[in-house]
Length: 123
Image 1 (cartoon, rainbow, N blue to C red):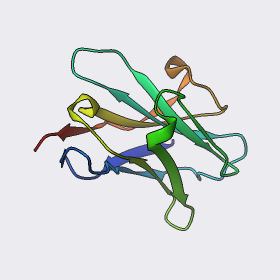
Image 2 (image 1 turned 60 degrees about the vertical axis):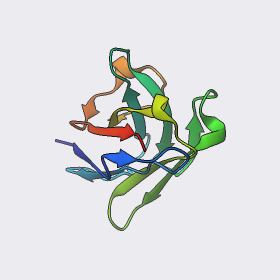
Image 3 (image 1 turned 30 degrees about the horizontal axis):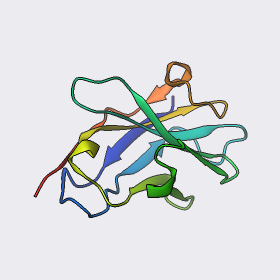
Image 4 (image 1 turned 120 degrees about the horizontal axis):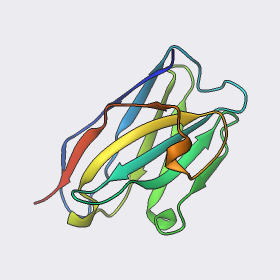
């Protein structure tokens, strides 16, 4: 059973970079065809898919966030990380990492989810 666990600072100042990490257990982030995403949910709003890193290291981003977003991985630690730059209070949200067996932006197709990490952007 694949398990995901987010970690990272809960408070980030405006204009800084938000950078949670997802640690994966019970499976490898290089498993063929699997895709590993970051998804967020601002207070009172729906889920927003942010981007994905696939099993082969290729990345795809939500066009609305692409200019500020980067996803990387550390295969030796079986982790992948999000970097969201130049944050504002609008980036305050619960940030989830999730996995599925195909590259997709449809959050309902993700099989495995972390519990989420709340990140607040405030000075």
